[in-house]
Length: 281
Image (cartoon, rainbow, N blue to C red; front, side, top):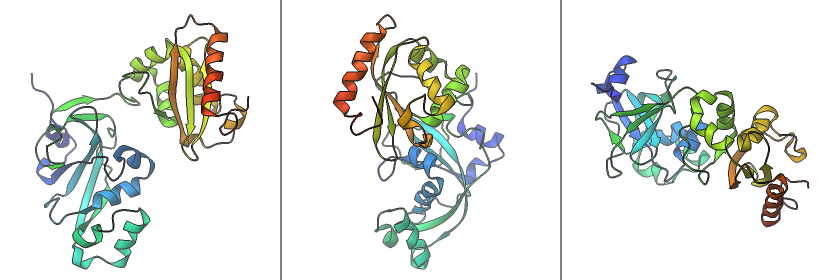
């Protein structure tokens, strides 16, 4: 059986692989995935500043961020419209470095590529997963890669552990609206009760809540997906785009509501969310 490779997929989208450089950003200067999701213009500018000749004569960049292990997650295709050599860079170019707080030394030893996010392959960003290879492999390549997975539409990836849960509000919406594409999450979150945390990443304020009814944690989080605030007074009116959901502790479905609430109150005390956060009781 022949397996589809990245180059085969590029050809299916009428993109010649010989005109493509594969880029795998790390998370050293910026968090690649977070920056791509929250500020696409910053992400494009970050990709644009590179050492002379780094992208060769490529007409397209297929850009990825780190996944689990040696895998990488596809973020999109950027078209290359030219490059401005370092000696020709203007004050307008350098202003972009200041705007995004990029390293000052980039103005001395890098060129700036003219990049634009392409409409090509816009149906599979954050769904296509490839095996990039070992961490020692160069972050700019022109070699074909095996495809590990193409996730279903609205998939947020496979559930791994309760300790590692850290969901954006956008991902929570995907999870609730498309349970068929996120079966592992549905099974895991609906089978346990427990105490959870909502962080407003805009100002760092915290809200502690608990789930002890039908549907477990998933059932409780469905209320936030529906209303944005789940009936909690201090969450009303806040921008849900900045909400981040995690789990402080889990408890079996057989634990009484009283015991779960006692654990919730313990966490509120420990984290100070009544005095300094978003809990009003």
